Length: 227
Length: 227
Image (cartoon, rainbow over all chains, first blue to last red; front, side, top):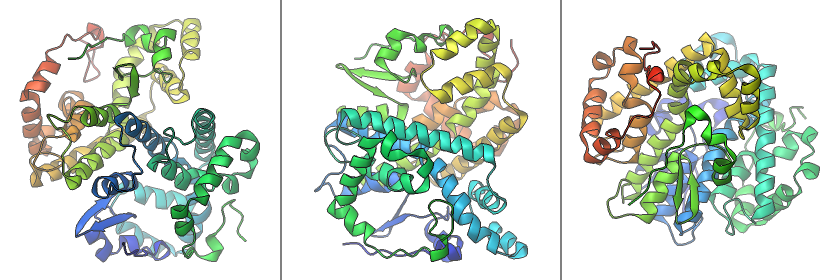
C-alpha cells in the first residue's frame, strides 16, 4: 500500500519550504519509504525493484536488466527533456505568463536548481524556434528508434514488460500522437501504436490513468491549442 | 580475467564497419561478455555488479544503491557532457582540423549517431564561447555539489566506495584541476581533492592508471595549451 500526496505545481508547492525540506532540489516525484527519501523517477523505480522484488518490472537476468537500463538511460537523456520542452512551451508558459513580474521574480528566487530557474524564465518568454525544432528532431529520432526495436522484440528491453516501457510510455509514448499530430505517428510507427495500446490496457497502468486529472482545464492542451 | 582491446579514436576505428557491427552506435566503451554486447559505462558497470557480485562496488542495501544511482545519473546528465565539451574543444578539435575537408565529410557519413556527427563538426569549427561558458558553469555547480556531499560522507554515495565515485572520478574529478587551473579547485574544494587522492591510491585505480597512455603526445593538453 502507498499513499499518494499531490503537490500542486500550479501553485509552486514544489518550491515551498515544507517541500524543499523533503527534497532540496524542489522537484517531483519523491518517494518517502519509512522516512527514507528517494528522488528521480528511474532511481525510485530501481529502488522499488530492490525492495519489492515479488512482481518484477526489472528482468532478473543481468542481460535483461542491462537492456532495460540502456533504454531507461536513452529515455532520460534523449527523450524526456525534449518532450518536456514542448510541454513547458505549451503549458507551463501559460502559468508563467499569468504571474505579475515582481511576483515571478520572488518565485524564481525560491527555485533551488539553477537549471529549473532558467527553464521557468524561458517558459515565460517562450522557447526559441531553433530549440523547439531541435527538440522535435530528437523526438522523431526516438520514435523511429523505438519502432525499430519493436519490430524485433515485443517490449523495449526484450520479451518482458519492464520499467523501460513504463518510462518511455510516460515520457513520450502515451501522448506523442496528441502532442505532435503532424508527425503522423500511426503511419510512421505502427508498432509503437500497438505497443502503446498494450501498455495502456495493463491493469496497473489503467489504475494509474483512472486517477483524477488535476491539471487546470485551461492547461490541458497537448497540441498547444487551448480548448 | 578480461582482455582489453584498444580502439584507436585517432584513426576513427570506432566508426569502421567491424566496430559498428559490434556496437551500432559506433561508441566506446563496449563490453563483450561471452558474446553478449553491453554498451554505455554506467549500464556496463551495473551489469558487472549483477554478474560478479563478489567484490561489490554497488551497495547491497537498496538505499545505498539508490544513492549510488542518484550520483551516477547526476554525473551522466550534468557533468560528463560538459567536461567532454571542453575536452573535445581542446583535443578532438586538433584531430578534426588536421583532416582535409573532403576526407572529413566521408568520415562524417560513417558516424551512426546524428548527435556525434554534430559534435565532430562543432569540434572542427570550435565550440561557441557561450556553450563553453555554460559548460564551465555546470562543472562549477558539480564540483561544489560534490564538495558539499563530501563534507557529509566519506564517499559520494555514503560510507562505501561505489561506482558513483568511479564515475565522477573518471568523468571529472581526476582531471578537473589540470583542465581548469583557474577554478582553483584545491582552495575551493579541499574535500574533493582529498577524496581524489584516496580514489587515485586505490589498487584497482592504480592498475588502471598504470596502463599505457595511447593518446598522441600532441593531444595531451589538459589545459588547452599544446606542449
